[in-house]
Image (cartoon, rainbow, N blue to C red; front, side, top):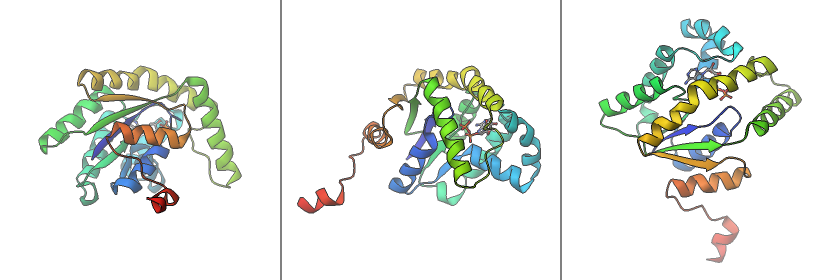
Length: 205
Ligand code: ADP
C-alpha cells in the first residue's frame, strides 16, 4: 500500500499516518521528521535546511526529492509506505511519479485532510502547549511568524498539489474536522478497508 497524505500543517497527517503504520505494517515517511533529524545531526543537508525550516519556508525540491528517493529504496519500504509532508510542490509530485514509474510502481491513494484555517491555528497552539507541558523542546518553526509562513507556503505551493492529483483521478478529500477516530474510519473506508472490530464486539461474534 502506497499512500500520500496531503493537508496543511496541523491537519492531522502525522496522527493518522501513525495509526495506518500500525495497521498496515508499513513505515510513515515524514519529510519533516527526516529533515529535523538531519538538522539535529548537523549533516550537510541539515545545515542547508536549518534556517529555511526555522523560518517556515520550504526546503528546495532537489534536497527533499533526494531524501525521499533514498528512503523509499530501503527494505522496510518495499511493502509500501505512507508519505506525510511530501510532495509539497507540483514539481515534487512529478518527481515522485517519475520515481515510482521507474520502479514499475504507482500510488494506491492520495488522501487530503480538509480542515479550516482557524482550527489549524488552534491545533498548532495546543500542540505547542502540550510539548511545553511535557518538558520537550518546542519546534523552531512553532512560533507565530513561522506558522504564518508555513500556512502561506501551503496555500501557494502545496494546495496546487491537490489539483495535480485530482486531475490524475486519484485524489480523495476527507473531512479532517471530525474527531480523530472518525477521521481514521473515513480513511479506512476510502482505502476500501473494513474498520477493525473492538475486542468486546469480537467476543460476541
Ligand atoms: P508541518 O506540516 O507541521 O508544517 P513538517 O514536519 O511536515 O511540518 O515540515 C516541517 C518543515 O520541513 C517545513 O515547513 C519545511 O521547511 C520542511 N519540509 C518538510 N517536508 C518538505 C517538503 N516535502 N518540501 C520542502 N520542505 C519540506
